[in-house]
Image (tube, rainbow, N blue to C red; front, top):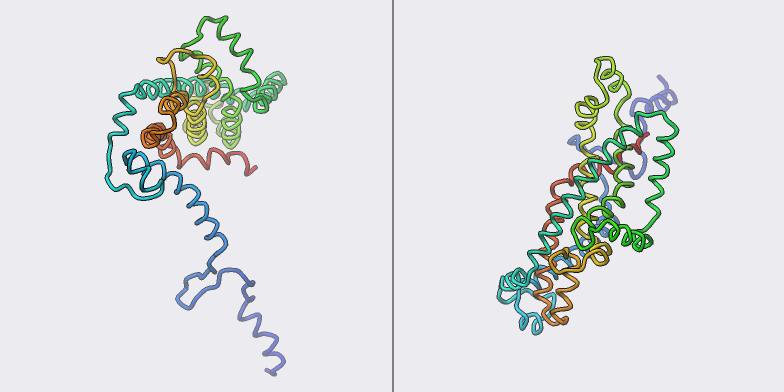
Length: 303
């Protein structure tokens, strides 16, 4: 075989060369990728943006007032103290935490109880009335709660539930329903239609299909809706401010605002201890649902 023939066949035997910038295979059989320095730098900056405020809140809550004023806000505590947490709990902050827990749990339960059958009806129904209702429901995403506070206040007073926790739960759940229905609808549309048809052939009615098929397969969406609704209910401020009046009905956000005013902006460690106590339930909710959050939020985008 001539040298010209060898030069023509050799590239085909060796195979195509790897494109520049792609992973290359080493002699040991492992893939080698170039380090992404720009991505690592961005991750480090974002970690600092998140970690520094958290460190400031936690470190400030574990020092006394004199240590905070003398050493500076970002220095390590010379003596770790827990008296700030005792001061916060003795001031009635435990009542605010309990009220927020009740409001959050009731809001999540109400939203899931209403959004799940509504999303199931939207996915399975072919009625124009249901499609129109879904479109009207999605319009609620564009309406801020601040724009409706006056009519909501009038409705709450006419229902004679002003200055109760129910007055906070009902509007909070109403403004959480559009996003909840949207997420659950996208999740249910990922379920193959053959499974619905198989349940129908087996003689299952809508209630049995919802319980035996939809509930197990929409768990990521349910967890996502629960965590999202819990965050909104826990961090809500406008409804507790306008729809409650007595100190026994305050939630944690309104309690933080009032507690800071009572301290006069001087006892910063005690205020940071109150902030830490208010963050713990949110951290627990995130740790509970973090594995399902991404899959629930991205449901339906693959189609």
